[in-house]
Each structure stands twice: as structure tokens, then as C-alpha cells.
Image (tube, rainbow, N blue to C red):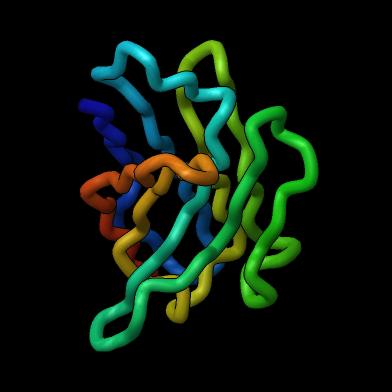
Length: 120
């Protein structure tokens, strides 16, 4: 069974930074580099939305408009880890952040989420 474990969330003031990590483990045939890795977030009372995604080889990351220029997604396939560097955080970034592993035609996997709270 594949497990995705997020970490790095917390409380930060507006303008601050956080770096989220998501580590994949517990697999035999899961090849991390074959999966598109994504970060989603869900604010209270709102739907879960895509924040950023990165292909297996790390090329061509994509971002939702509201985080462009502030967030950077990256991955280290040797460590089965995907990161989300979040700079210049705003109160609207407050949410639970989830990582997701997806490969066309195969089941997707989700982490349990990590809370990010941006408040003064």
C-alpha cells in the first residue's frame, strides 16, 4: 500500500515562508518517477483545489494563478519526495495542503494533509 506523508505545515505570519514535503513509501511496484505529483489545498468551507503539479521528470510545473511567482513545486525522485516552497504567504493561503500521486489509468494516492495557517 502506497503511503504519502506530508510535513512542514504550521503557523506563519503574512509575508513569511514555509516548505512542505511529501514522502512516498510502502510500495513494491510504485515507481515514484512515473507519477505526476501535485499539491492541493482545501480551505474551511471550500472545495479542494489544485495548487501546483509537476511531471515525473520535473519539467513543466504548473500552478494555479493565485500562487504563481510565490510558490515553487519540485521533486527529488531519488528520495521519493515532492516539495512545495511557499514564499510571501497570504492569509488566503490558509488551508489544509494535500499531496497527490497520479498516473493515468492507475489509482491515485493522497496524503493525510498538513495544516498551513497564515495569520498575524
